[in-house]
Length: 285
Image (cartoon, rainbow, N blue to C red; front, side, top):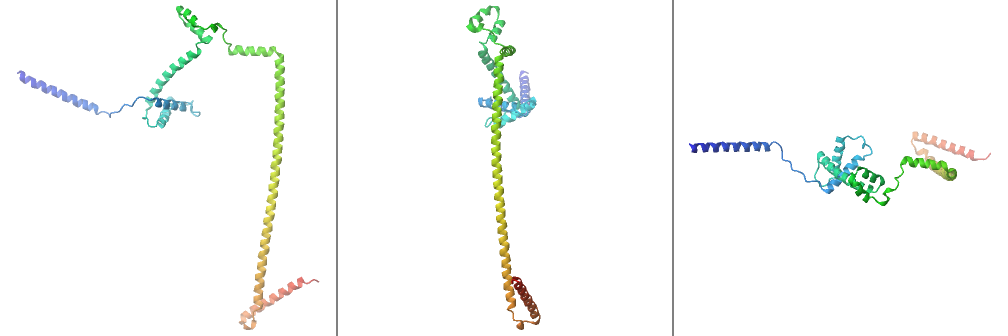
């Protein structure tokens, strides 16, 4: 009886183990495995801080940026500058920035305390906030000059300056004389600048006049060249016409065909007539 119970228990335990392994396998297959990125290195921190500064001090949209858009721009800027370092997500960069901000705030507090601990106003606040038993200990650490008079505020300094200005008329007269000197200097500088401008205008006018004369001379020279070209062309045309007329006058009309004979005879008469007219025009009365 006992032997029959043990195999049943073993089967149930085996079945439970197989079911657990199957369930675990199903749970493992729910999503893809993601490798955890390494911690930020000092160079990555520098890239993050530079990206934050560049985006936050953008002269165009630095004021109107919302948180999501602001960090989206930082993420894009960081991933563009990361080089061989792994790509970081929006949440990863924001979380790392909060850590850097907390540490730098502590450092800034220590530096501020070290710089302000000897100031009269700071020591006065320490004495006010100290417990009754700590006043003597604080007094021992206060320097000998800690009981000096508190620094003058902005309003008090302005009032004192106005009072001293109204109580000393000689200072006012000196101020007026300085203003007059400045006015005279401005006038002299203005006169010098006007004189320089006048000489510059004269030089420019002389240059323009010289340029105009050069352009006129160039145009006259080009006109003379064109006129000479026309004269040469006319002369060539006259020479060609003379050769043509001489050729026509040398033609023997007896050897020409009747029609050509009539044509060349008429041409010869016209040529001789023109020569006679030219000869008459050239003869003095």
